[in-house]
Amino acid sequence: MSAQPVLSTVHDTRRAVCLPDLLRQQVAARPDAPAVTGGGERLSYRQLGEAADRLGAHLHHLGTAPDDRVGLFVEPSPELLVGAWGILCAGAAYLPLSPEYPEDRLRYMIEDSGTGVIVTQEHLRDRLTELAPRGTLVVTPGDAREDRGGRHARGTRDARPFPHQSQGPGGPPPGPRPESLAYVIYTSGSTGRPKGVMIEHRSIVSQLRWLIARGHLAADATVLQKTPMSFDAAQWEILAPAAGALVVMGAPGVYRDPEALIATVREHGVTTLQCVPTLLQALLDTERLGTCTTLRQVYSGGEVLSRRLARALTEELPWASLVNLYGPTECTINATAHRVDAATVGEDAGSVPIGVPVDRTRCFVLDEELAPVEPGATGELYIGGIQLARGYLNRPDLTAERFVASPHLPGERLYRTGDLAQWNPDGTLQCSGRVDNQVKLRGYRVELDEIALAVEEHTWVRRAAAVVTDDPRTGHRNLVACVELNPKEAALMDQGNHGSHHQSKASKLQVKAQLSNPGVRDAEELAGRPVVG
Image (tube, rainbow, N blue to C red; front, side, top):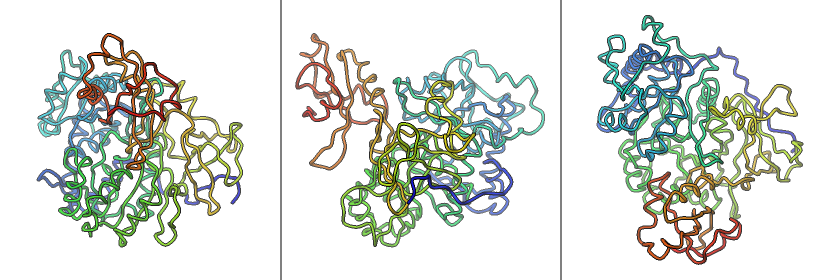
């Protein structure tokens, strides 16, 4: 294996299309087939297409245009798919706004993205109206059914239409172009503030075509949509109708309940399931995963997949394929993939490879001078190709820092992943950690500085640091906040309630206070200290 990058060999010569084109192809091919089900409601492809077109026309009447960001504040339900596809049919980009998120994070995302209109559900309208800034239009799919030129939109105080509305509501939406924005996903930021990753149609269409070409998505698949919609991994579940699949909407919070998740898989005959390794282990621990006989494809991503867990999964589900996926949000969901071979996964410790690049994607393992490292040597993983994001919304400085010019292919950009990697002798990639202070935990990509800043908002905390520790009892990694308390408050702290503050922040990851000694130390030192729970 040379030190040169793995190059994708698939060259898609079909005409350029955008996401609405893919949906319309499926509507024409299978109008009466079920497209989405959940909460006692089921929509056929014809019904999904009609609802998306209605919402798209309504948003167009309100003045949306290509590259506008339209918020999507919807609980898991068929309306989530109607909202996402409707925004896309309007030519705009959708911005997932999970109702589970803390209000301060939602406000920041709405304001930072410049969102002027948000699609929601009727029962969430009042909450959103109070949450969103003045001037924000609030829309439901029901408004689209009553549309008379956009007059049924409601909004917050001083709500105003988009500036484009002066052009009038006549004619159909212009539709996106391949270089238009499809969606914006907010991820953790090193400054303590999330940053918006801008994904274009050509990038997500390429990802979906790879999923279809390799058999990961198909018209006979039943896909469980259970990943929180604000994560990039959720997007291929939400957009699975592009392949003609049936999407089953999991109940809100089902990803936190392994027993309920198994019941959902069994009830709906789910064939396609993706989970973080932590959740896959929890499913195994129920001792009922083997009863999910309809599962054909299980995908692991978001964390390192250990060989031990991979062996256990292939033994529990010998009829199903297990695929390890890897990809930063900035590279459109999945940048590499590795199908686990039960016969060769072996008895060794360590992790499963992240595999080889997906179609039209290139991977490089480079040293600090951006020169390729030798096979087996460790370097930073850089990714290039059509799936790279446009950049970070309103952050040209950070975009220039993370998306760099390739020294190997003139005119190409590369994304600096911050992940350490090596080439294996068989040509697959192996990840071995992070080069910065950002970690993946329970499937969440967490910036430790952001966690520390959130903890420091508590009035009792003078300073904080966040670290990840390994629990030898469970084998799991834990996120730990180490704090220096304000002296006056320290004596009054109720250790039974100290976690409630951070539970209101983000991700609901359990944070424990380090109380053994005052003063915040370096993260490397803190990671080895005992934790008070």
